[in-house]
Length: 298
Image: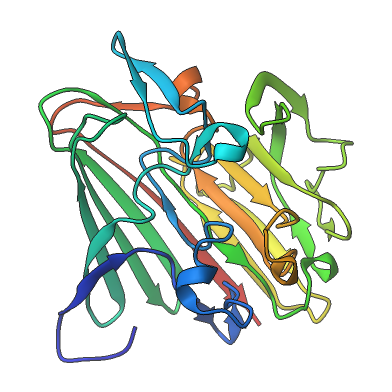
């Protein structure tokens, strides 16, 4: 984003969150010697996860008495993953300090609903702020959940050297397909306990957390810090009741593993289209929005 005389329109393209730098701290790592089209396929780097985040068991769900089957986009696990919009063309509008991306998701197999989506990325002295708005543009209720998939780094070769503070009290237990079992376990005292800041070290996470502990202003803040005392914070508004933390150990390109920490704000749990945990039902004409962002301190 750069200064200019007024709004500009960019060609439609598949949307992802670009690399962001605030106060000299790079928050989203660049691809490791890869061309962008290939790099974006691995690990859902920076992608909006709509109209559901994370995994949907067998790609099948029931809603309002009907059963729907979506494409299995994680075929190795027989799941659908990260919604429907990652590979679609979004329209972009560029202003001085923001980019507004919009998409009308038309009815399709497995999701026969009409959903209008808009995501605003704003960069200023307060850091990067991302606001997602979804509107039911059809004539029947629809199921909805939102997420996004940034990877954060603070200039170290690996995330192992970084410390993490994650204010979440519960974690979702999963089966061998990464589908929640319905059981919740206490974070405190577990290998996933980052309630107080501590080094990430060799900890491996591909874990969804809930019972987030907000600050006095209602925002939940996850803080990473480097050995050089550089710090970056990912904040989420109350619409995000879940966060997925991914240390990147299963990214196919081994050179990119553990180079950035995936922190994925989610309005609902993984598999929410089946369990209903955090699922939003939008009536015709109804809208919902959610906001998160990144702030860096040098």
